[in-house]
Image 1 (cartoon, helix red, strand yellow):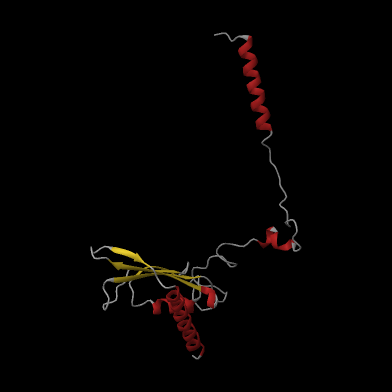
Image 2 (cartoon, rainbow, N blue to C red):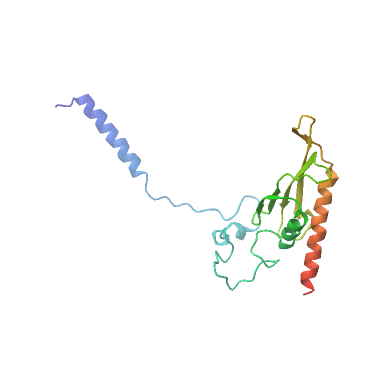
Length: 181
């Protein structure tokens, strides 16, 4: 099988282009900037400041020499807020509780004295510190219609604030009682 001159030129051109592209794939070094434009502190962006997602000491399975975070537990949120949240919502069925993300989701709850109304709470712990803005509550309410179906109903905004204040009060009580021991 003989190749024509025209196909030989095309093959040669394709080989040259491929060789040129492969030759350009050599090692490239890039120096990352240590400052962003307008910043005055160059050390906060340097490579030496990057930490681990597991914390400064890495993952410790069997304990370590580092002290435990404030609150004395290995959960990802404030231990007093977490315990106070569980205590406050203990009368409702818990559908999901994530101590590392700080999320408690309850199932629907109807009070025995009013079975035609039910509530659900999503509670978010936002900080590792015991602070007033470290907790948020989302409350949902439904009422049973005459046909037996559940229909969403409005919730007074003050109810969410009252729940947040109740949790904060309980968290402060837990903190004071642990300090007295």
